[in-house]
Image 1 (tube, rainbow, N blue to C red):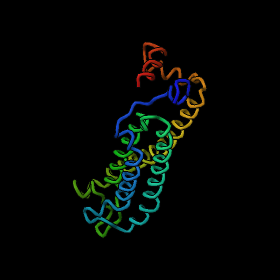
Image 2 (image 1 turned 45 degrees about the vertical axis):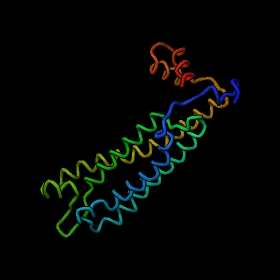
Image 3 (image 1 turned 180 degrees about the vertical axis):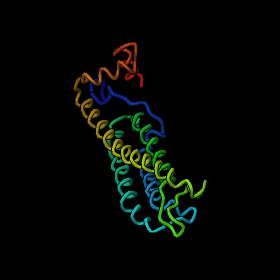
Image 4 (image 1 turned 135 degrees about the horizontal axis):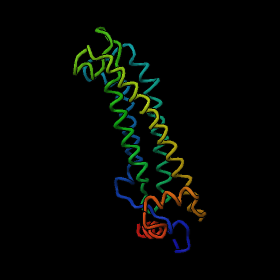
Length: 194
Protein backbone atom coordinates (compact mmCIF):
# COMPACT_ATOMS: atom_id res chain seq x y z
CA UNK A 1 0.00 0.00 0.00
CA UNK A 2 1.27 3.44 -0.79
CA UNK A 3 1.35 6.36 1.63
CA UNK A 4 -1.49 8.01 -0.29
CA UNK A 5 -3.67 4.92 0.05
CA UNK A 6 -6.46 5.63 2.60
CA UNK A 7 -6.14 2.14 4.07
CA UNK A 8 -2.48 2.67 4.95
CA UNK A 9 -3.31 5.88 6.83
CA UNK A 10 -5.64 4.14 9.25
CA UNK A 11 -4.30 1.53 11.58
CA UNK A 12 -5.80 -0.22 14.55
CA UNK A 13 -3.39 -1.42 17.20
CA UNK A 14 -3.86 -5.03 18.04
CA UNK A 15 -2.48 -8.26 19.38
CA UNK A 16 -2.86 -11.87 18.41
CA UNK A 17 -5.81 -12.07 20.81
CA UNK A 18 -7.61 -9.08 19.30
CA UNK A 19 -7.10 -10.59 15.85
CA UNK A 20 -8.38 -14.01 16.92
CA UNK A 21 -11.28 -12.77 19.04
CA UNK A 22 -13.93 -12.94 16.28
CA UNK A 23 -13.19 -16.65 15.88
CA UNK A 24 -13.10 -17.13 19.65
CA UNK A 25 -16.47 -15.35 19.84
CA UNK A 26 -18.09 -18.13 17.82
CA UNK A 27 -16.79 -20.85 20.13
CA UNK A 28 -17.80 -18.88 23.22
CA UNK A 29 -21.24 -18.20 21.70
CA UNK A 30 -21.80 -21.94 21.26
CA UNK A 31 -20.66 -22.59 24.83
CA UNK A 32 -22.94 -19.82 26.16
CA UNK A 33 -25.93 -21.16 24.24
CA UNK A 34 -25.29 -24.61 25.72
CA UNK A 35 -24.81 -23.06 29.17
CA UNK A 36 -28.12 -21.18 29.05
CA UNK A 37 -30.01 -24.13 27.60
CA UNK A 38 -28.44 -27.03 29.46
CA UNK A 39 -26.11 -25.63 32.14
CA UNK A 40 -28.33 -26.76 34.99
CA UNK A 41 -27.49 -30.31 33.97
CA UNK A 42 -24.15 -29.86 35.76
CA UNK A 43 -26.09 -30.30 39.01
CA UNK A 44 -28.70 -32.69 37.59
CA UNK A 45 -31.35 -29.97 37.46
CA UNK A 46 -32.59 -30.35 33.89
CA UNK A 47 -36.34 -30.02 33.87
CA UNK A 48 -39.30 -29.49 31.61
CA UNK A 49 -38.20 -25.97 30.60
CA UNK A 50 -34.82 -27.07 29.21
CA UNK A 51 -35.98 -27.41 25.57
CA UNK A 52 -37.75 -24.06 25.80
CA UNK A 53 -34.63 -22.36 27.17
CA UNK A 54 -32.42 -23.98 24.53
CA UNK A 55 -34.67 -22.93 21.64
CA UNK A 56 -36.06 -19.61 22.83
CA UNK A 57 -33.02 -18.18 24.61
CA UNK A 58 -29.92 -20.19 23.71
CA UNK A 59 -30.36 -20.12 19.93
CA UNK A 60 -31.04 -16.36 19.66
CA UNK A 61 -28.02 -15.62 21.88
CA UNK A 62 -25.91 -17.91 19.67
CA UNK A 63 -27.22 -16.29 16.50
CA UNK A 64 -26.59 -12.72 17.71
CA UNK A 65 -23.04 -13.53 18.84
CA UNK A 66 -22.21 -15.34 15.59
CA UNK A 67 -23.53 -12.45 13.50
CA UNK A 68 -21.51 -9.99 15.60
CA UNK A 69 -18.39 -12.17 15.26
CA UNK A 70 -18.75 -12.31 11.47
CA UNK A 71 -19.19 -8.53 11.25
CA UNK A 72 -16.25 -7.87 13.59
CA UNK A 73 -14.08 -10.23 11.54
CA UNK A 74 -15.06 -8.49 8.32
CA UNK A 75 -14.16 -5.14 9.88
CA UNK A 76 -10.88 -6.41 11.36
CA UNK A 77 -9.67 -7.67 7.98
CA UNK A 78 -9.62 -4.05 6.78
CA UNK A 79 -6.68 -3.30 9.08
CA UNK A 80 -3.10 -4.57 8.76
CA UNK A 81 -3.24 -5.87 12.36
CA UNK A 82 -6.54 -7.70 11.66
CA UNK A 83 -7.60 -6.50 15.12
CA UNK A 84 -11.02 -5.97 16.57
CA UNK A 85 -11.76 -2.62 18.19
CA UNK A 86 -11.11 -2.40 21.92
CA UNK A 87 -14.69 -1.40 22.61
CA UNK A 88 -15.87 -4.45 20.67
CA UNK A 89 -13.58 -6.72 22.68
CA UNK A 90 -14.68 -5.24 26.01
CA UNK A 91 -18.36 -5.45 25.07
CA UNK A 92 -17.93 -9.10 24.04
CA UNK A 93 -16.25 -10.02 27.34
CA UNK A 94 -18.93 -8.16 29.32
CA UNK A 95 -21.62 -9.97 27.36
CA UNK A 96 -20.01 -13.32 28.12
CA UNK A 97 -19.80 -12.59 31.86
CA UNK A 98 -23.41 -11.43 32.05
CA UNK A 99 -24.66 -14.43 30.07
CA UNK A 100 -22.73 -16.79 32.38
CA UNK A 101 -24.49 -15.17 35.35
CA UNK A 102 -27.82 -15.48 33.54
CA UNK A 103 -27.33 -19.24 33.09
CA UNK A 104 -26.31 -19.59 36.74
CA UNK A 105 -29.54 -18.01 38.01
CA UNK A 106 -31.93 -19.44 35.37
CA UNK A 107 -34.34 -21.79 37.16
CA UNK A 108 -35.91 -24.89 35.67
CA UNK A 109 -39.02 -26.82 36.64
CA UNK A 110 -37.79 -30.01 38.30
CA UNK A 111 -39.46 -32.71 40.39
CA UNK A 112 -38.46 -30.67 43.46
CA UNK A 113 -39.89 -27.38 42.16
CA UNK A 114 -38.15 -24.50 40.45
CA UNK A 115 -34.38 -24.81 40.87
CA UNK A 116 -31.31 -23.13 39.44
CA UNK A 117 -27.62 -23.63 40.00
CA UNK A 118 -27.84 -20.73 42.44
CA UNK A 119 -30.61 -22.35 44.51
CA UNK A 120 -28.77 -25.66 44.33
CA UNK A 121 -25.74 -23.94 45.91
CA UNK A 122 -27.48 -21.80 48.56
CA UNK A 123 -30.84 -23.50 49.15
CA UNK A 124 -34.27 -23.73 47.57
CA UNK A 125 -35.64 -21.01 49.87
CA UNK A 126 -33.76 -18.43 47.74
CA UNK A 127 -35.65 -19.18 44.52
CA UNK A 128 -37.26 -15.71 44.55
CA UNK A 129 -33.82 -14.14 44.68
CA UNK A 130 -32.85 -16.31 41.73
CA UNK A 131 -35.92 -14.99 39.85
CA UNK A 132 -34.84 -11.42 40.51
CA UNK A 133 -31.29 -11.94 39.33
CA UNK A 134 -32.31 -13.97 36.29
CA UNK A 135 -34.59 -11.16 35.12
CA UNK A 136 -31.79 -8.61 35.37
CA UNK A 137 -29.13 -10.81 33.80
CA UNK A 138 -31.53 -12.05 31.10
CA UNK A 139 -32.36 -8.55 29.92
CA UNK A 140 -28.69 -7.55 30.05
CA UNK A 141 -27.61 -10.71 28.17
CA UNK A 142 -29.92 -10.01 25.26
CA UNK A 143 -29.21 -6.27 25.33
CA UNK A 144 -25.45 -6.84 25.20
CA UNK A 145 -25.80 -9.42 22.42
CA UNK A 146 -27.81 -6.89 20.37
CA UNK A 147 -25.29 -4.18 21.30
CA UNK A 148 -22.49 -6.38 19.94
CA UNK A 149 -24.21 -6.60 16.57
CA UNK A 150 -24.88 -2.85 16.48
CA UNK A 151 -21.32 -2.07 17.55
CA UNK A 152 -19.93 -4.36 14.87
CA UNK A 153 -22.09 -2.62 12.26
CA UNK A 154 -20.87 0.76 13.50
CA UNK A 155 -17.22 -0.32 13.38
CA UNK A 156 -17.74 -1.65 9.87
CA UNK A 157 -19.39 1.61 8.73
CA UNK A 158 -16.65 3.77 10.25
CA UNK A 159 -13.93 1.61 8.69
CA UNK A 160 -15.59 1.83 5.27
CA UNK A 161 -15.76 5.62 5.57
CA UNK A 162 -12.09 5.79 6.59
CA UNK A 163 -11.05 3.61 3.66
CA UNK A 164 -12.92 5.93 1.30
CA UNK A 165 -10.97 8.84 2.81
CA UNK A 166 -14.03 10.64 4.15
CA UNK A 167 -13.46 13.21 6.92
CA UNK A 168 -14.40 12.55 10.54
CA UNK A 169 -17.95 13.31 11.60
CA UNK A 170 -18.60 15.72 14.45
CA UNK A 171 -19.24 12.80 16.83
CA UNK A 172 -16.00 11.08 15.82
CA UNK A 173 -14.07 14.31 16.34
CA UNK A 174 -15.58 14.70 19.82
CA UNK A 175 -14.83 11.06 20.67
CA UNK A 176 -11.20 11.58 19.69
CA UNK A 177 -11.00 14.76 21.74
CA UNK A 178 -12.29 12.87 24.78
CA UNK A 179 -9.88 9.98 24.21
CA UNK A 180 -6.91 12.30 23.62
CA UNK A 181 -7.16 15.39 25.84
CA UNK A 182 -4.22 17.01 23.99
CA UNK A 183 -6.48 17.42 20.95
CA UNK A 184 -7.08 16.03 17.51
CA UNK A 185 -3.41 16.34 16.54
CA UNK A 186 -2.49 13.94 19.37
CA UNK A 187 -5.27 11.58 18.26
CA UNK A 188 -3.97 11.67 14.67
CA UNK A 189 -0.41 11.07 15.92
CA UNK A 190 -1.63 8.11 18.01
CA UNK A 191 -3.40 6.67 14.95
CA UNK A 192 -0.29 7.11 12.81
CA UNK A 193 1.94 5.47 15.45
CA UNK A 194 -0.33 2.43 15.77
